[in-house]
Image (cartoon, rainbow, N blue to C red; front, side):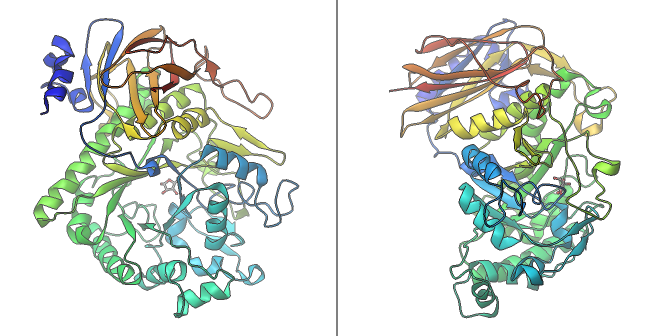
Amino acid sequence: MTPSRRRFLAGLGSAGAALATSSWLDAIGYAQTARRAARALIQQPGVGADFDRRVLGAFLEHLGRAVYTGVYQPGSPLADSKGFRTDVVREVKELGAPIIRYPGGNFVSGYNWLDGVGPKEQRPTVLERAWNSMETNQFGTNEFVEWCRMVGSEPLLGMNFGTGTAEMAVAYVEYCNLERGTKWSDLRRSHGYEKPHNVRYWCLGNEMDGPWQIGQMQAREYGRKARDAARQMRVIDGNLQLIACGSSGTNMPQYLIWDREVLEECYDQVDGISLHAYYGNTQALTRNSTARYLAMNLDMDRQIREIAAVCDYVQGLRKSSKRLWLSFDEWNVWYRARSGDAVNGRRQFAPKLLEEVYNLEDALLVGGFVNTLLRNAERVRVGCLAQLINVIAPLVTNDTGVLRQSTFFPYAWALRYARGRVLDMRVESDTYPITAAGLQADFARNDQVPFVDLVATLDSQNGQACVLMLNRDLEGEREIALEWRDVTPTRVLTCETLTGQDLKAFNTFEQPKRVAPQRLEPPAAGARMTFKLPPRSYTVAQLATM
Ligand code: AHR
């Protein structure tokens, strides 16, 4: 431990020391205190680089109205000559998601990518079996890559490991990334795309452990297929970053075992492994308690630690020098539009599926997830908010425009303000108890939850810091004193909060600003800054440091 780090930890005093060995919270830098006011010591990490912005990515699946009427709606007065919705392009571009995963999700496990390329009038309409919808294939890989370039995002493509063969997965890479002179690269060129797309990040299938997945597999069977396909793909393009399918949730019966077995088969051929998680304020997950609900980003912290431990275990077994990174490529709140007609397209084109309406408490939790992803960014290289438009999404379209749901704001703040390095942080906070009784096993725990959850970044290029703060206290304001150790804020550039009386309030096209950011009076900039966080709030502060 460096002397400065020793001083940093010692600065926490006795409360921090008391919990250092006993609490899982210590692992994420938190200690319990009886004082009402919270305190955070912040300093630059001794080692490490800027976090990979891909951790703040998003997801677009051929599902419901995500692509059709969300992104692509030829004939709409809002569409450009290619059929792309210009209002959506504007919003997504402003949002600035660095990477977008496509085309699924469950959809990908029955998808023939060849159906979605070439002259549009020759593309077949097929019955899509994951969501029981009609798929016209008028939007496919080339349109997606073009759209990504328009909105300034990098594509992350998923491959069909359900009905698809390794051969067709490998051909997909050749179609997208090889310059010319082969069957698949020349097919792309004949489709009007002379230059290769150079897609670097690829998912080797989707949730292949799930009984709902087309072509569900056993772990070792999937691991061997992933290894074989990956080895061939690397012959085509040595620059690929390949993501193996991890467990599709912490409640899967084979959770962690699946991950271990898959990695025992394909560790050497992959770069990352996927994690997925959806959360909800339900009887089974939270006993409908908002206090428990707002602690759920700590369950995400835990999942990250558990999967990282499996990766490191297999690394040890394989005596490998390679350390895998994690791809949290599906995460969000999703519990209302999750059954019946909300998940059955009834053979319609662009049906209304998974159209979750997000309220204030959902937005606060999404802020918590952003904090968790950022504080784990050293390990989680890719993250995808699932999803981006219309389907469990921060953005919703109708025929006349786009609506920002409540969850848009915490995600947009992280994208806009969190840059550079994630700062080291030790937090002392008052806590409240959560209990296991009656909850689904993976969420059943007796623990102490800090009222305040925060993360900070520093972009030394432009000398700006960002602090994102969640106040889980449903009744009262909470103070948080930020003590800056080796960087001193000189000016507050932005300070906004998302809060309100009604945790269940949500935005509609008629009332689009019921849940919207408000200015928060910030403290004076300096080495010690005490923010007063409103009850049930998520707050961002952007600070100049030079
Ligand atoms: O995002 C919605 C669905 O959730 C995805 O298609 C699937 O991968 C997950 O189960």
